[in-house]
Length: 230
Image (cartoon, rainbow, N blue to C red; front, side, top):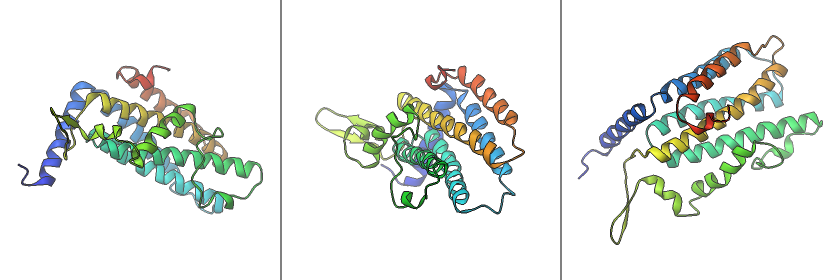
């Protein structure tokens, strides 16, 4: 019997974070490095002004990515995994749109044709890793299949299936979500290295690369497969 739903949800989220910290103690350090990277971006762009339409559009997309990425981190720690996949789908589209804008401007084409259209995930606009995620995330976002509802902590009984109204920690699903989250982060970092070199005359990537290298060293000890390629 649930008497105070909000209290029960908060307790379940607290338990989820405790389980993650116990099973994967490096996770909070990794998320901390990601947070430091975003903080450095925010500080770097703090006094930027006088941009045109295209740069303003890209800056808005970058800010949206940063804000959403921090929300995703919190949702993963809270075991809110349906919400995670929906937001990660949005992040993939955002990276694709940044790529589309760059292709249009390099070809001296107007970006007006992009407005009102869903970003194109194909045509080399995102990495193969992100493109492979996108189809599954779309199925979850559109509720087009029943299988993803297992992320709601499916509880099969003899003749029935129940779903938890509280977030419940699942080690397997949480690790998949973290791997996806970090992969999307890396794709964004790669884009931002090029963007900053083009956008800021005095930009040098040494501080960013040092931070990313520290993240990678921590990641290699984390047990997350996303770091296996490094």
